[in-house]
Length: 161
Image (spheres, rainbow, N blue to C red):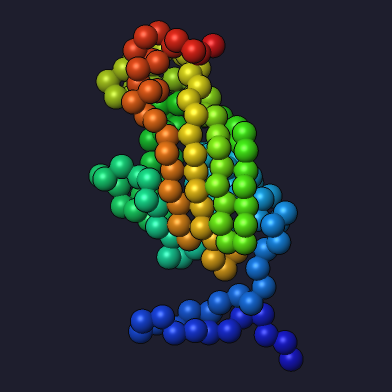
């Protein structure tokens, strides 16, 4: 008999923990697949395959819950206003952690911060940091300058296509 999980006690709850973890190449592919599926395609129905049940998102606006439901809402709103294309410029991984330097190419298709759709594609840089547990994303932080995006749209897409 083999065991690939073992229960452990956290507070008052018993959680199964996988004893196997992704290799660095598997983790890199997993994060790239997450960015493409969830952020670029807007496929929030697949979030359960990527997010740990105890997922916390530290980058969502204060009006959103800092969990998978808040992320789902934020992605839906983003896709109402933009056709986003996140390009991973650099990815650094270590076991259970990943940081991305990204470029976000945002085609403005809907009302956003009071700005009517312009049809412009604006590019802004950013960073995403992930912590993984049990082969799922348990924590996310990001630094993406929404104010820079707003200013570019107001200036008619300076630095855009």
